[in-house]
Length: 227
Image 1: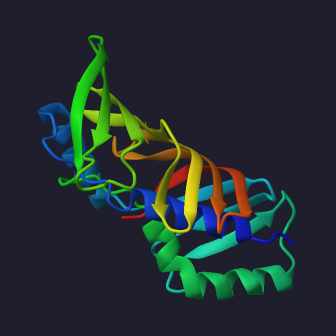
Image 2 (image 1 turned 90 degrees about the vertical axis):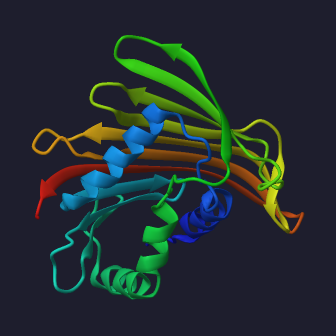
């Protein structure tokens, strides 16, 4: 049986770090791409999700049209989950499904990001860097980001966020290493942009003596249009 303690701690840290990631003074190309991403929300998909962390892996499916149990646990460490594990999973989902979904939502709109700079550009792609506004995020001003943007049509392929020095998003947590790499894919049927992978690496200390050292990979695949 897999314990999900590492994931829960990781999701909480990610949520604390990124909950205020909001854009300010967005370049026109980036704003267009995020508007396109928002517009893609009209296409509703079922999908599979595989999460791998130091404790093992779980495979889940999501069907937004299901009347009950939209999330289903398919396997644990490539083995069919036993009845006890399935029951525990559904209990956890009933309690925390909303929080889990919210912690995965990394919304980008307009408040606290600045200093967008083009670091490279080709005929098809623009590479930007950005920073957070320190006066509004003084606890996480060590974070830096990179965006890979396709021009025509405008869509986000990749967002990377990482720290350049240790920081404390909230007491009593100190983050020594934070790296998040989000990759998107353009689906063939509707051309909608959907998540492909999220890789997160965290080294942190809590309450001075407690260490967190984890790497989590989330893969999204088997997208199937349901609406």
